[in-house]
Image (cartoon, rainbow over all chains, first blue to last red; front, side, top):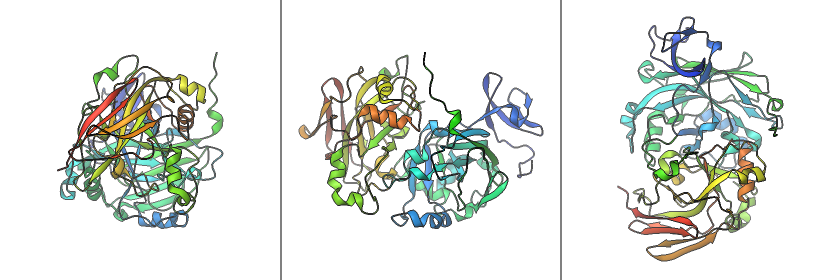
Length: 268
Length: 226
């Protein structure tokens, strides 16, 4: 454990193993199921590490990333947070496969800090907001830029694709993250560093986001806020391994796969 | 799965399916909406009519039973009453043809998508479109040809809009097929076919009723926000 995992971490994962879904904890040899079985990291199927409620995503929440995209935006970035929702079908666990459509010229990862709500609330003041946070995980929220259009941008065809929002590996309780605005984010593609940022550079910080969102919607346990990605997005291809790491939170691995795997349904 | 906090009526939970809690709506699916924008469609920020379906998600906190009052935000004078038809998906649709998609529809309901009036369609506008309790779903009725519904919206007993489901830019079967091209639809998912241009406004203190032949009505009060 090199990413600052405390000796007796309370972080948890959800994994499928031998016919059932289990809660698991970190173990020196990989992970340990609640029933005591110890397994290697690559022996299990990793699921998103908590039961996701509403998935809330932020766009353009790092100033340098907004600059990186400025050329193709037809309006300046608003002062109000850019928020959109996702459906459960978009979610995927650690070490999963994401479809990289061959026809697209530009599909990119987005390493993001995911904030998981633990306590329901409406009209939460920023000063109280952190009491509503249960914990954190890493998100890789892919986008296919070819499909961007200027209507409800970014729309679902870009940001709500099957299995293109990766969460995990661990749910890290808030008590283990003294300052969520002091975390380095990094992405590697096939081992080459491509994206580097820091949560200190969030335009809208977590308390402000919770205050803003809960101003019009009731937040509930399991709701998750994907806080946006820093600059450094680049195209990825089928076969690439993408690793998103957030300091102290986890290292999330995903592999892109080609159209050829997704064959038409055969019918009798 | 729906959370306990979401009090959709029990009759929608009959086997062999129950609502999954996923509700996706088609925006700008009435040709009159784009027509009303005129030349603005080709100017910035839009730079041309949409090519793919323009979709939005109504998350669990928006889902409301047919008689649940809506609380207006304190700073909002009125809410747009976007009556529409919800299709209930009865089996998995992944990259389906329009024919397969229509065949998988297992029920229909009236639905109302309540939204603060939008000055622009450029951004997803979560604050306007995802108010607590802003998506009323009526009782689910049996399968029906989805292109033959007409509905009436009345506010305080006076007819405020008559519209129907015949004039979609993307017809229901094509809409489901196109959506299933990148996001798998599952049994229990609801797809809102699109509100008609000219959705009437309702203010605090008013009572809204939406009715359509062959479908259960929706009727609720609009209340002033705290």
